[in-house]
Length: 316
Image (cartoon, rainbow, N blue to C red):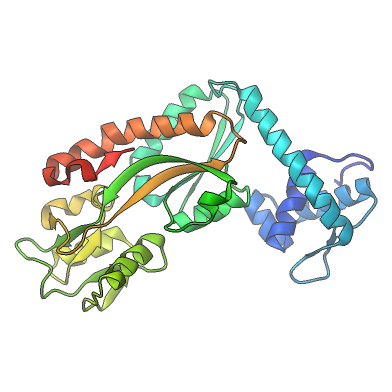
């Protein structure tokens, strides 16, 4: 049922902003986790309450009307104020939060993420958790469009949003890229099995090789750590991966050889991001819990397996 005339709700505002940003009722519904009809009803109710059409639904994609553009500026301020109020009421121990939408890169999904959620469940009693797992660039996009509250991602090199002020960044981990080869072999003479350039890590690897003027022979580009390591173990080539990749696909650890890169080293950083100031102390506290879990669950076995990693693999 549409909202009664004269009533503007925060939910209606959030629906309007999602529809305006996505440009389609169906896309807004997917982002919000509701049906398209629910989105349409909320929009109709909001337009009735304001006495003006906000979106031109006959256009593809949806177009914001002049009245919608004017209201959109106020809507964003109202939604930000509501989020800040929610965070302030949560207090320092986070106990007042009722929903937390968390985005996590896939590298942590097997063990760190479940433990982190268990830790947060103890601290955030009564809170509902929504988890989104995916590649870093997609999670940052979801954070920017307010579909997530917090996102743990690899840092994007030369990322303009990190300097734009709309998000706060809490460093978590630094890790080097390493060479993974069949046992007893070096990369020399072997084809490179590329990690897909569709993801940030693959683009970072390709960019580093290009900077060094290296063009190793390659026939395969895969998006799975397990598939890459299985092929390396079978002698099909070598790969450039990270210690986290080897931790996630740990069953291949004994079937491959891990060594420093045979050329100039490079690394990547992983951080927790949130919209600046919205959740107050919450992002920093989650980052602290995450660092503790990584320090106890991830780093010890990796340092034990390859002591030469030393300080190149470290919690920040």
